[in-house]
Length: 174
Image (cartoon, rainbow, N blue to C red; front, side, top):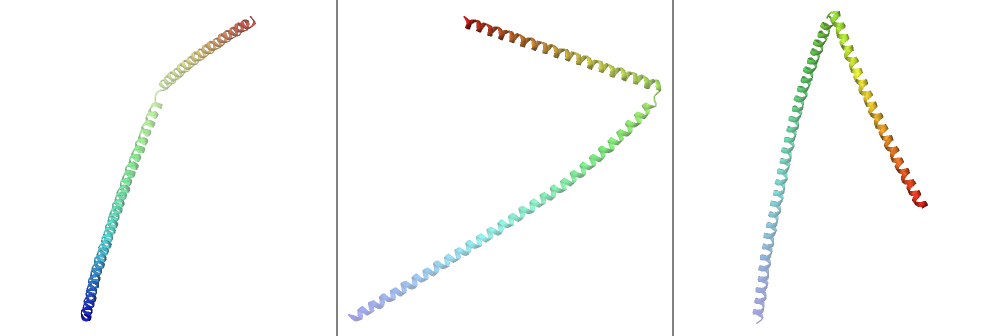
């Protein structure tokens, strides 16, 4: 009987040892899987970060290229604008020279032509002045008429108001 109990105890201990070994093995396998998962995750994150950094770097380079192109375009436009202004100034100068030459030619016209032009200009200025004076007189006359009409309207309103007051007094006195 004791022998059977001892054997049963040894068998039970052996089973517990085997179970412990199995559990330890499973725990180590689980730890190994966990470590592999963590390494994979770390590698994935590292790869993503490197990819993102690469994309940002490429984006920055593209922006720099666009800025450089914009600068070049701006320089071209500035040069074109400068050239246009230079041509415009040259054209203005040429026109000024031609105008001066025409004036000089006109100055060389006969004295009679000059006097005729002066008289014509004087007449034109006199007509303009007379016309302006006429317009000013008409405007002044219109304003005076409007003022007189406004005064008359106010006098009429005042008469009406005085008549209303007098009528009211008379009614009160009655």
